[in-house]
Length: 433
Ligand SMILES: [Zn+2]
Image (cartoon, rainbow, N blue to C red; front, side, top):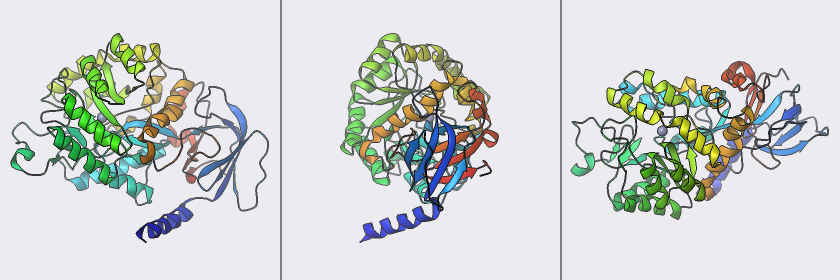
């Protein structure tokens, strides 16, 4: 009974927010994969792409018709490494959850208004926020939440001040900083934390798999957690049909994570050639980021320790990009902006264009990232997205200018995104039609 009630409620929400039928005429289509644009028309019905055609599409009077005016039509963008709830200023990290949530509201708005129709939250965002966005309570992109990040005591997600004792040793709440991280040690605690995240609605699990920049007590070279603990997290995620993504920089950390079943590495800046080969052989993803590493040094509140660690990992960035290209490693598009840096989001496009063609960057930000997100398997309740194909979710952008020649047009979404459609819902239309 509850289930049918829920379906009825969702159906009401859907009817009120979707234009039932929209025809976008006269566009040049970037389908998410191919570098060549094709001239055509796209019909959207019930939130899905119903028809893609080079010939005119006949529609009835009830269909809203948008004149694309020969603009480029792209799938909505996807960011694989977002922290919606990590944008209170870094020097106010202890702010109450109400502040964290209020700021997250602005962050979510900024992402969707910048053309990002889907994001994978790489830890910290409670799945309830993803649900609130889905129900229309909060404006923002579709979110694939990871829930609280799993960190061992003294790991990259253990953000306690040095004087604060481990809460679990006193039998109290293992969740810290607005439930953005959970401190876990031992196989049992890893199993329990993963299962708890999945119960809340996480679609994948994030673990801290080695030393990190923005934490003060774990050296970059540190290995986190033990092989048994990694296997426990992977097992519990796998039992729900999904996967584990892990923060890591070094070859040693990445190899340990892959050996124990992790499918997606976050960052990876210090891996060597032999490790890149192992990554490719195991079909593992390296989701890495560019702009954040160049901008972090100016973040208010960053410590001397953080800066020293930043210098170490930044040295590996160019080499990692070379290895990703050399072995054709799946990478997608990811930003990892934190501490209020989210307005830099679209700078990631132009940073990447220093290494990849605009068409390659656009494919990273659409079809390639979508493939990574769909590793959530049956926990993906949203169907197929990230490409312009019949039957796929209608996440669509109309772009002013020539992004395939000059990707910098995406730096100014307010001016250059003429249309933003998320799941068939028009959230912005400046086409004048
Ligand atoms: Zn991150």
